[in-house]
Length: 202
Image (cartoon, rainbow, N blue to C red; front, side, top):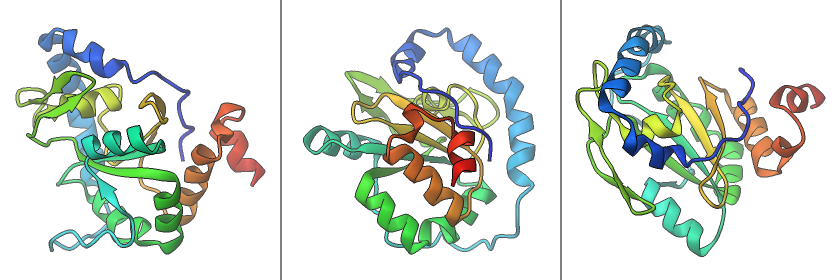
C-alpha cells in the first residue's frame, strides 16, 4: 500500500469553484487515459448488480456532514465509479468483512460517493456540480476536490470532525489492511507517525 499523504485542508473544495474550467479540463484529460487503463486491468467480476454492502452503514456526503454536526465523528469516503472493477471487488469482499464493518460503524460516518454522479451537492454554502466536459467521462467537482485532482479509483478520503482532510488513500485493500488503516486514522496515530512507520510497527 502506498504511504498515506500528509494532512491537507478540505478548503480546496471551495477553491475549486474559482478555477478556470479550462485548466481543470486539461488536468483531467492528461490523467484520464492512464487512470482508465489502470482501472480496467482488474480481477474477474461478474456483471450482476453490486451486492449489499454488509453491515456497513453508508451515508450520502450531505447526510454524513449533517450527522457529524450533531454527533462529531470522522468521515470515511469511498470515491468510486460504476465501471471500476476494483471498487466492485472491495464491495464484494473488504466491505463485507464483519470486523471492518463493526469498526467502521463505530468510528466513522461511511460515505459512498460516485465520482461521476450528476446530482448537485451542497457544502458550506457552495453548490458543487458534475462537470460533463471534464476528461473523457466527466467528473463531479466534489470528487475532484476530495482527491486533489488525482482521479484513481477506488480512492478513500478521511476527513476529521470538521470536514478537513486527513488523508487520501488510493487503491484496493483487503480486509486486514483496511482494518489497520482505519485504526491508524481513528486512533489518531496519523498525528505522530507516517503510515509506513505505523504499519511496520504492527
